[in-house]
Image 1 (cartoon, one colour):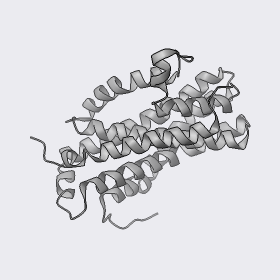
Image 2 (cartoon, helix red, strand yellow):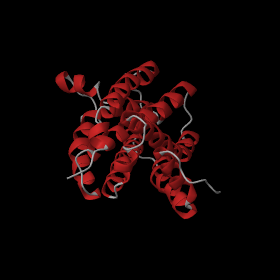
Image 3 (tube, rainbow, N blue to C red):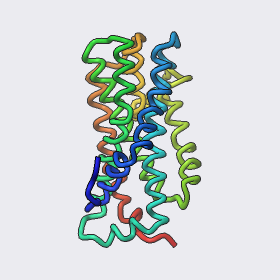
Image 4 (cartoon, one colour):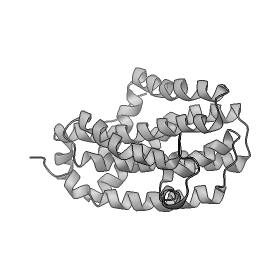
Length: 240
């Protein structure tokens, strides 16, 4: 498969994703190797859901944060900022395109998991939507982190500090039935809705409804996307 040279910054990520065949195969094998064995095992549903959730969160956050940091160091983003396009539009395109590419990467593993655990269609759709919203939120976090990093190693440090509390609040491993302030905080974490939907697909009932999985992460991720786009001018500015 051949591609023309990219004429927009977001197209660079698309070209890099599809043009290198060996890397492309590895990108699909990675989630398959992590998710499918877990889905095929007798692991409790909450832990199977947690594995998928963490793969999605890490893929979105580190992918966006590290690639932007590298481009910043190479001076690519500074040159992109000289184009007539709005910095916010550039960042928004990067956010959406990277979330879609991450979703394409995870989709085969998700489909196999659904085949191994047949569930009502509404919950399959809700879980799939929840995964995409998680990728969108994770990419937003990765782009936000890129505002403050000077190397890919910094991305790991900042991401760890941000993601671990969110994963805890989402109830991936502990704190699965929070009360009080923790329950309120959990409602604002989009990862939690994906986690509940995946738990239901794997056979563990939760109090979350499909409508909540579709509605609340959409609102939260819209706010996150808008907020990260407001950082566009700083992100595209030269680093001293």
